[in-house]
Length: 439
Image (tube, rainbow, N blue to C red; front, top):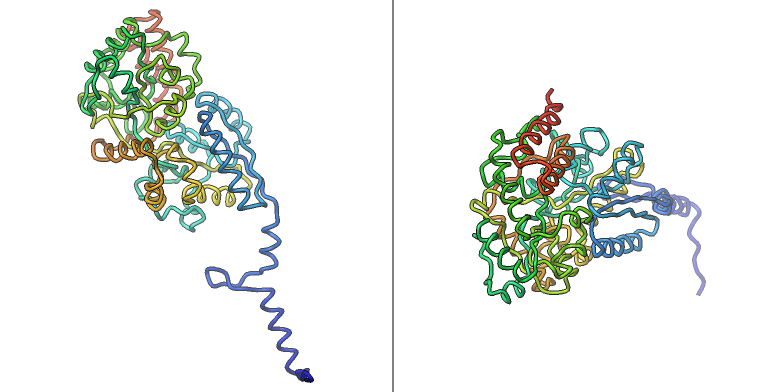
């Protein structure tokens, strides 16, 4: 059968129609876009740097996550930088000074104000408003915790709460039953005394986390609301807390400070993981990594009181920020959005960076969680109903104040200063540091 040729008059508009279809297609918002341009840009190689802190298990799964993302986005190449908590900030400071921060920075709430107010972080408001970072499944209150002076400088990766992680089997062998969520500092002292007789120690409570917790239980605060001074003026709160701490240390309830001061705060270094400790006070998101490091079942409960519900609060575990100096802000934002919302990615994270902020991800993960992982979910759910609002992000100078507090604790434990002398010195010098924030 012979094919009939189309008349030339009909071929011309058809050719234009074909050209038009190949060159332009409507985008998601209904506007035409150049597909050739899209294909060209999709092949353009993108290089990102990302930095985070954490233990070995966090490093391992984060590298797997990055490999997943690069497989989904072959044009994206991601360089990684990671360290323990203290070393992380030591490395980040000179990078900030040289205007060479990584594109994506794992940020802590205690450093957010410092980096944001020095114009080192990008305001992410537009990137969330236009959906590049999808936060539709997160509560506005959670997202707002990453704001400083109304601008969004960090996207929370999850929420967590301080808690007590302990070896229930070890306590049971010593004749100590499960710890209730309404226990007290006196209860802890009695437990520590009995466990010392078994050769087991209580992990040191980090100075810049648990002294502020203690203050909150006394209706006081570490920093004032405006960040220009300490949030307490009576030295007795400092004296009471560190007198208790010194008594416990000298009674042998904790390991030597010489050994403790060398710790990089890695889970593998924790006494409970090494086998010579029965308990540690830590953030709930650290529970899984502590248990992995300890290679045995652990339990999780609240912090000692009284007034534990006044001291406890939900906090962003950590945040992702984008450097102001980044040349790839949109691509960095796309990675953050994927990190927050991809269910398969979050199956690897397993709550290590906190309970996911996406309600959809949280619901999708629940059926996949082990009994041990559910302990963290259940604990954070309990804290939601038994806690008080979080304080504002730490002010500029907070890191310097916390270094001063650490120095005071060390001098107290080494008997270089009395608790009363340390209280006076700390309050005077800390207030002087924070007074610089007065406008």
